[in-house]
Length: 248
Image (cartoon, rainbow, N blue to C red):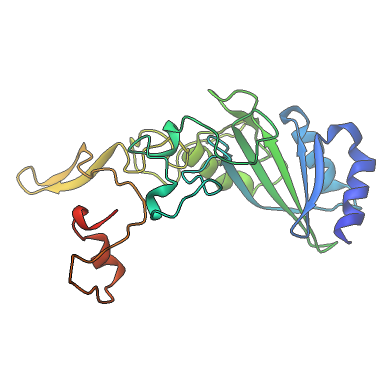
């Protein structure tokens, strides 16, 4: 079944249930509300014209600072790589004060769960996007009762993004360590983390301590020669460790 034919079939079958529907990179993507998720997924699995027997992945997405960039590339000058960067904060994106992108997000929700379905019978794939209504407590229904393979996928999205899957019988972390604080794939999570782990030879055990890594500003540097000195080709790592006085 071609993507256009599947899109038409979905629009005829689900009608106003689809908040949006389209084709991207050769695959159909539909967006539905959380309240319609279970009924829609059950129909997509059971009805022969769809026959999506498997959910092959469930991803979390955080649209915080979506469309914002550190580089104002449309208003540049010729004075070096640092000309367009907006260095507002040490951890960067959460502190941006202005919208620098020409694109804008089409909805105001922050967190979404994205489901990737596979129909072996029809040799077809489908992507479903569901936005959580509440950004502070993102909740969507669990599809574990529709596809048993959703178990670990939902736990992963919960662990990394903090999305709660209502009805999941064992929703707990699956990738991060015991006692981990926060959700590391959220866009406002510190790049250097909250704590670091090391082995203490005196206490003879692993301990947690405040992060000792200083946040780095990831701005490309231009290495210039001193007067009368030629700059030979140097590895990137060596250039990155050059003195600040040599960089612009």
